[in-house]
Amino acid sequence: MSTSDAKPPEENRLVSKEELKIEDTKILRRIDELRQDLTAEIQALKAAFRDVHQEKMKSEESNAEILRELAQISTLLQKLNQEQEYTRRVIQSHEKSLEEYRLLIHRIEDELQKIKSILRVD
Image 1 (cartoon, rainbow, N blue to C red):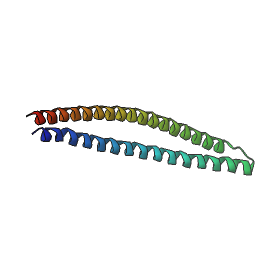
Image 2: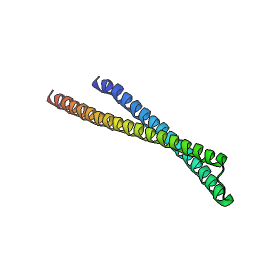
Image 3: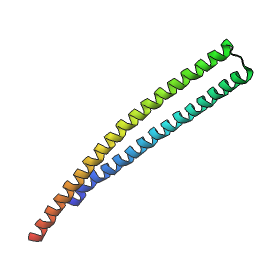
């Protein structure tokens, strides 16, 4: 009976670990998307600077475009920093959960040892 009692927490623990892995994957995918967006924005900014340099003109329109690109890059960097901070918090939470799972496993193992020793005595 006690073996069947131990299975549901183990199943819950496995589900929780899978959910943690799925959440980590989603976060990492989002960070990769932001990095790709940032790379594209940087390339666009480099192209804008190259055009200005080659044509040796700094019209108001070109300057405004550059400022927009810089503003977009700043926004993307802020989003990336927020995502990284969120990822750090999630990882810390997951590490704490894993430690709690380890402690639970040790407790279960201790209880199993107690049960085994009781069974040997009888």
